[in-house]
Length: 163
Ligand code: HEC
Ligand code: HEC
Ligand code: HEC
Picture 1 (tube, rainbow, N blue to C red):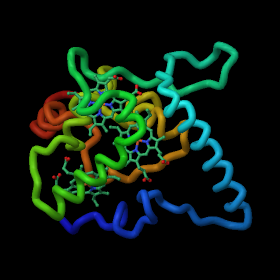
Picture 2 (picture 1 turned 180 degrees about the horizontal axis):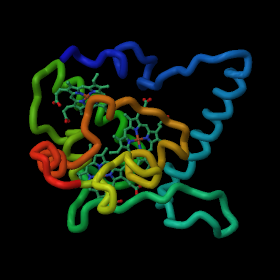
Picture 3 (picture 1 turned 90 degrees about the horizontal axis):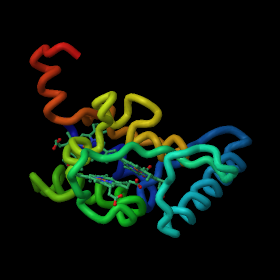
Picture 4 (picture 1 turned 45 degrees about the vertical axis):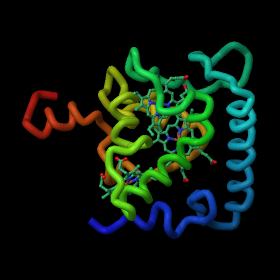
């Protein structure tokens, strides 16, 4: 398969996809940026998102817990701020440099972060990779190619196990 250039190579610094649109897009883009800036303020303050949506304050995303008894590849607050950079570097190293079994493997993220209910990181709005992203209006195309399920589940499904 060809290296997935679209997601990174053609992106502006930090890899964010620019959205194009009609006359309203400047305003819309500003609004999104302001929302993200506000979210980053919260993230930078080290606030852990509480699992609630109504205590009089701005609703925050509910983030599903990782597999019990595991630890992330970096502390949670670091991951909240930097996971996108780690993933991008990892991908470049793997795809262009041939590095395997590396620290920031996307497959590893999914093994630990898939929902106990849906066995996926993206199937439901509350699943790990979409919970924050839909809140922050971030769109990623990673799962057009990568599996959103843990390896064990994907393998079982491929062998025809009942869902
Ligand atoms: C067009 C298909 C495609 C898209 C879209 C895509 N990838 Fe990949 N990615 C690949 C292929 C092919 C490999 C190399 C094979 C492998 O190791 O799975 C790879 C490898 C990787 C790796 C190293 C292997 C691993 O599991 O850690 C990471 C990390 C990665 N991609 C992250 C991403 C992220 C993050 C996105 C979304 C921003 C993304 N990819 C979007 C096809 C794609
Ligand atoms: C071995 C299991 C494991 C792996 C692999 C793993 N994580 Fe984690 N992750 C966790 C655990 C457990 C936590 C909760 C720790 C905390 O919040 O301090 C966590 C926390 C996080 C958080 C913060 C979530 C929050 O509630 O704010 C993000 C973001 C994150 N991980 C992303 C990733 C990404 C992206 C990858 C792959 C590069 C990854 N994780 C790999 C277990 C894992
Ligand atoms: C704690 C909330 C949170 C979780 C959980 C989370 N993300 Fe993110 N992610 C964000 C935010 C916020 C951004 C936007 C950063 C920005 O705009 O600077 C982002 C951006 C990204 C980007 C870069 C998008 C771009 O256009 O450049 C990738 C890739 C990404 N996340 C992958 C993942 C994957 C894969 C998972 C699940 C394993 C995940 N994220 C889980 C909050 C989160």
